[in-house]
Length: 317
Picture 1 (spheres, helix red, strand yellow):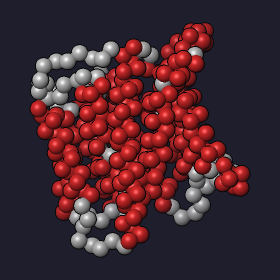
Picture 2 (tube, rainbow, N blue to C red):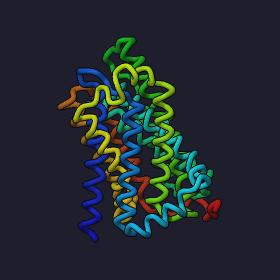
Picture 3 (tube, rainbow, N blue to C red):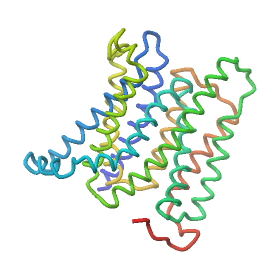
């Protein structure tokens, strides 16, 4: 069990870091750009396939057909439509963010999803946070503010505008991530079939993304094709996204919050190193270093066990 625990840590670090770095590079490399809407659509379709394969592996063909017959109703799909649509928006925003921000700044700033998830958990699930957790959230806000403060080097107006777009995209993504995550937790409290629920979420997200292709990029698709700008790198990004569900399930089964905090911290450090040394798109400043260190501290602190600041509260369900 201990080996599986640390294997899940390694897999989580690899998937998180590799996805961010490859996605960033795919959006900045020379050559024709692929359409974000089509990439999100294919990634969600791949997640549907992955979930189906896992359900088949766990239950067999006959049982899987019975599960799909029971679970795949219009009412159940409508039930998951809210988080599914939010996840679709979030995935598109993350592509936009990494088109305008370096991987390290993205990794550090995206940890604000801990704050939004915590707040929505308190409001929607009536969860109680420990004093250490509340303190870690305050540290997190200060840390991200430090990272976003401009360095002494002057930025061009174009670069400043690009950074603002990336920051806005990632802040909205943090909000959608927090709400959708807690909403999904509410759904799972009434239905523990995580793979079936994940498959439903991915299916609705795929349909929503496909509608987005028609609404925003249909002319480009008709002109240059659905897979325009695709390369081996883009397919690797999509594969890493599709495998994300398997990684999350593995972590939920074998790891804990402390281990997930360490995984996020290691991912931040690795992203900073690769962005600075290989991609050369990160300008280090003393504020960025201090802010990144504080984000790592707050992430680890938030995962530590502790007594709630107040009395225990009942869940909505």
